[in-house]
Image (cartoon, rainbow over all chains, first blue to last red; front, side, top):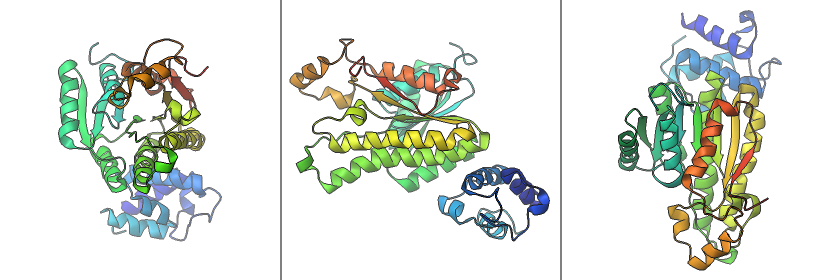
Length: 79
Length: 253
């Protein structure tokens, strides 16, 4: 299921518990999601869904909710 | 060397500006060492022709042409998306594409400045940016940036070229620090006086003047640079990052 894969990608990319991955989770909202963690998260999402984000989307991906919208642009979803 | 032996077996290697000169020598050596080489030039015809020539010379070689202008950010992005689509990974990026436009500082036009910086520095930056994204997924990779002895020590008439190649060194040091935790190594090579199309057009007096500073008393060959590229591409340099290797026959000691 897509939602499970999304949670897995966030959990593994940020090295956090799956319980923390909610729509409200946002960039710099937790210690693990800093600028370095962001690039690891991007790699994790790209690997999980076999896509390559545009740089603008890498910059814009500021929360789980936003990530879902961006992923839909790449044919992943709807969630 | 057979298909299953060599220092780079199983690695996907992208070399920009590989139609001739140093880039071409790097492509040939990497292919000899078992890499699957992606030969970049600005047009598909020249990229395919270079790939075919290498495959003809090395029957077991895996070489594909990939056309894009490193100075065109949209083209760079599309090219790396295609690499992701077609090859799924990238192990080595050799940022070799560059141009030489000499002018005394009072004669430097805006267009010359923009062209040199966009290709030599911008192209290196954007290719490295996209390569890092691919390499981060696999937690490994080697980015090799071609600078120049002019980028380290300067030269009259080469203010813009030298600045563009010095910028490449600054980029190399910063990326080495930033990408080290992802096991992505970033190094630079600073060739000295190498026999290429770019240097062949120099007046004889200028060549003689340069040669007086070369301790090894011979002009460098593109294959001399390719050897350093092979080292930095291979696992023999697994613990080497943030370094600049001078390939200059002892011009600067």
